[in-house]
Each structure stands twice: as C-alpha cells, then as structure tokens.
Length: 460
Ligand SMILES: NC(=O)c1ccc[n+]([C@@H]2O[C@H](COP(=O)([O-])OP(=O)(O)OC[C@H]3O[C@@H](n4cnc5c(N)ncnc54)[C@H](O)[C@@H]3O)[C@@H](O)[C@H]2O)c1
Image: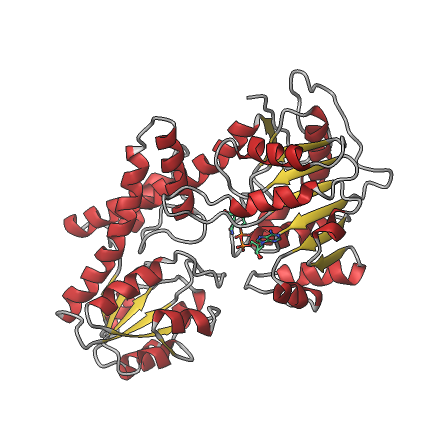
C-alpha cells in the first residue's frame, strides 16, 4: 500500500507516495469546484451539503422526484441531527442545488460522487445494479476530464467494473478517472463525521485523480490514505466487519456474564482501558443492525467465498447476532412466564439513537419473534415514522408511558436519551406488571429495583 498520513493541523500535501511524490493538482483558480452528487441518501446528501459548506458548487441528483422536491424546499427526507442547517446554508448561498437530471449535474462537473445504495442481493452479495446504472448513465454526459468517485460500499473490483462500463459507453475519447473513496460516516453524527473524519481513503492508480482528491479533502485536515482501488474497497469492508465482530464478541461475553453473575459493563470498562482494545463498540444489546454492518458482513462472506476462502469467523459473528435477538426474547418470556396474550411496550425501533433509520434494525427482529409467540406489541420511538409501525403491525403510542399503559413489560430496544428521564413512578403505576427488560443497558438497575420494578439488563 502506498500510504501516509499527516498531522491534522498540517497544510502540507497529505500523501507522499513513490511515483506520486510531490504531485500537486490545483482544483481551480478560486479553489471552488463543481461537484456532482448522485444519490441524496444519508451519504450523498451529507457529502453534498458539507462540500457546499466548504465553498464548492454542488449539484445533487436523485431518481426520487419527491425527495428532490422536498430538498429544494429545504426539507430533509430523513432524521439526521444538524443536517437541516447545513442544507439551508447551502441553498441560501446558491452553492447547493437539487435536480432529477443527471445531464444537469454532470455539466461542467470536475468530480462526480456515486452515493447510491448497494443493498444485499439474495445470495448475500452486494447488489450493484444501481451503481452499474449510474456508471452507464454518467458515461453519456462526460464532456471534459472528470473524476468519478465511488462512495457507495462495494466489493473488491467494483472500481474497475465502473471504469469498464464507462469506457464502453463513452461516446468520445474524453479523459476520466474512477477512484474508490469509501465513506465512514455514522448516521446520527453524519455531519460531524464528514467534517472530522478519522481518515480518508482514496483508491486509485491515477496520479491526477489522487492529487485532485487530496486537494479536495485538504481542508478537513484528516490523515489520508492513497492506495490501490482493491485495497480501498477492502478497507471499508474490513472496518465495518471488524466493528460487527466487536459487537458480537461483547454480546457473547454478556451472555456468559449473565450465566456466571459478572457485570459486562465493568468487564467492557476493564477491557477498554487497554489501548489495544479501546472502549468503542463494546456495548452489549439486541444485536447490531442498520443499513451497513449486516449487509457488509454478508457481502464480505460472499467475496471471500467467491475467492476460495470460507470466512468462518464472520459467519460466527452473524450467527451470534441472530441468536442475540432470541436471547432478548427468552429474557422477556422467562420474566413473564410466557408472552402469549401479554402486552409488551417497546421503547425504540431505530437501529440506534439519533436516526430514524430502521433498515435491518434488531428491534424488528425481536418484535417479530415476540409476535410469533403471541404477544401484542405497543411501541414508541421519538423519530421513527408511522409507516414503520404499520408495516410491522405495532400499535404506535404517543410517548413511552402511553406505550406502557396496562403493559406487562417495557422492553428498551434503542438507547434514546429521553428514556432515561421518564417519570418512573408514573410508569410503575401505569403498567399491569412493573417489569423492565433493558436490552441496551441504558437505565439504572439499582434505582429501578428500589422503585419496585423487576429489572433485567444484558449481562449485568
Ligand atoms: N448510511 C450510512 O450510514 C452509510 C455509511 C457509509 C457508507 N454507506 C454506503 O453508502 C451507500 C449509500 O448509502 P445510503 O445510506 O446513503 O443510501 P440511501 O438508500 O439512503 O440513499 C441512496 C439514494 O440514491 C438514490 N438513487 C438510487 N439510484 C439512483 C440513480 N440511478 N440516480 C440517482 N439517484 C439514485 C436513491 O433514490 C436514494 O435517495 C451504500 O453503499 C452504503 O452501504 C452508508
């Protein structure tokens, strides 16, 4: 790997690689560039709005006209803290605009970022059909040199795949480069993460594309790794699946803690002080979810298999994750002596707090198992929309106490802060039986038990 990093405060070019040593590509005379963003989901919208905030001219395209209309009116189609302000600033300055026309965004663009979804196909592999479509469409509109940047999470070889598609369809001999630039932002803190990345990874063999991307990202002052495309694509999968591994590992440890009477919170603390381990992603719960960790784990297992390696470890990570849904359900069943005919108040449906994203949320997996066992579910989530409740068959309540009215148990499935400050004496009075299963270890067991609740967390 040709890689280097620099101190965050440095203004020196951020990579020094053999062959690319010292190369510098000024972006434009006034350092503002035109950037096309394809796809205005969590990644695309944050990328576009933040680049506009950094002074560039951004045109975002999406195939969803409703989404585009909303964005033009300054409405954010999903919950992401702080994003509305950045989008509003971009719209007001005229540096950020939205359209459904790819031709329009490609007009004069120096970079085109592909930020479309790559959901799992039936065999677990990443479905690249949208990336393929975008590449084919982009090819028709390239009029002068442009760097096509793939930010979607894609398997190894996808950068080459995109380049081949474009080359096949390019009407003229115009120059272009394709680079891989995986995104590491987290929903819930996406704006902060984009503006303060731990690292930026660029995968390209082109000195010109590497130089331009280095200049584009320079204001963020983050360590930059310029490497070959396959390595860049692997860095993304390896990072996400390592995080998934940490979560399944601590869930397994939590289950053992439950059996032997140890406290997993303190175990994680004791582990985390070891600098080789760290504190992050050592919180047990109902299993990992969201639009990335489960699908990227399945995709990497597939990539490995297609290349002759059976990734047993990662399969185990997914098995532990599935089993964790049942661990939570068994806790509820044991405490209620079966759930048939019981009312369960579910607090939280989002896969984590500060987002309304319910894609692959463990909350739904747990709810489904409880419903199959005959329970009635009433739920509350501060930001998840009505549609998610309806499609899961969950009665939606206006607040956490309303959800628990006459319920036999409160089941905490997302660690929203507002659940810490519930009026617990009022909750106690509202419930048929005062039982709390805290699948996120969010609440204080001691004070709840003193108030007369039966409390059970995970591994404590
Ligand atoms: N969500 C995250 O936290 C996150 C973090 C890092 C990386 N990623 C990766 O980034 C990619 C995008 O993820 P996301 O969560 O932003 O997806 P998303 O589903 O929120 O958004 C994708 C957007 O692309 C649009 N789109 C689809 N086809 C299009 C086309 N042909 N032309 C224009 N627009 C099109 C969709 O309408 C949608 O608005 C995925 O590969 C994902 O794995 C996601």
